[in-house]
Image (cartoon, rainbow, N blue to C red; front, side, top):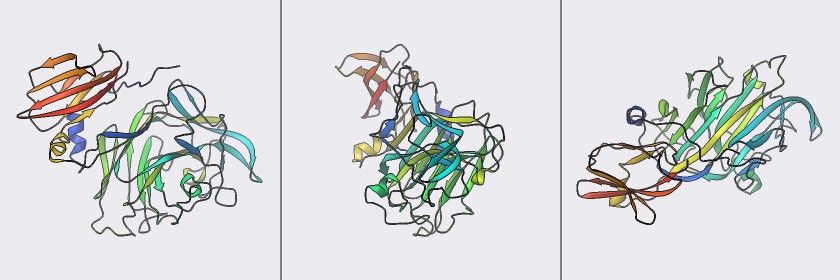
Length: 360
């Protein structure tokens, strides 16, 4: 079993400055996550297997898979979630199809915040992996929140935020999209980005959702922002809770499936959702200081436009671990033991305190 948290990305200040120019709100408080520690079944307290095809036992868009709750199609191993699409004849709800996969609903819903998902994608024509959200109020058979009694609104009026899709364009071209009553099936609100080999390389797919705009990022670099000038139920159904979905569909809009396809998987390192608490005057100043990556096993970087006079790192028992009287904005934590630490940042006559989680 691989010990988690496991973090290998070092986020440098200049990278975040580039992307933050398109973000109107920086979300820093981790409110929900799955690091996929351990081996075996997914955490049923966090995820729901959606298996009931709402289209007479099938799924929409001409998709050719059944979603199952079997470990053949979704499991955790070596600190990663694996969602596996397989070619196999499978009968469910009286319908026989030639492919199986998994579709997970988060048992957490939220309004506004940032989603980060670090993932490798499946390979092969006809695979259609997605990281996305739907309105908690969607009326869709078998969806977790529908089964909890929240279903009041059909699609696309519930709103859909596609953080990452692959298979709708050329290989290694990933896309984001917004589906609303004003732009649903043949969506106009979309963008693509070409990456290096997405089946071999991890990338962090992100969405930053504020009351005013939704910005999509890959590896912390923004590439598309949705900000309609008129926000109403047709263009902006994004003022209510959404929940997260992870899945691989087969066929449909992703095209013809490779004849020699047998199986492929989406491997997810972590899922993290950030929000901000209601802020006091001091908190507003504190929000000008963001820490990345946190939790960490390597470096932490302080992002701010304010002056830094000194930084000090303490154990939870108050022991001083590090004290620097300079403007260093990056701190190496590799020599520290796993645990919770308190970082104090001194700027003028103010002190900002941040909780840091270190796991080696």
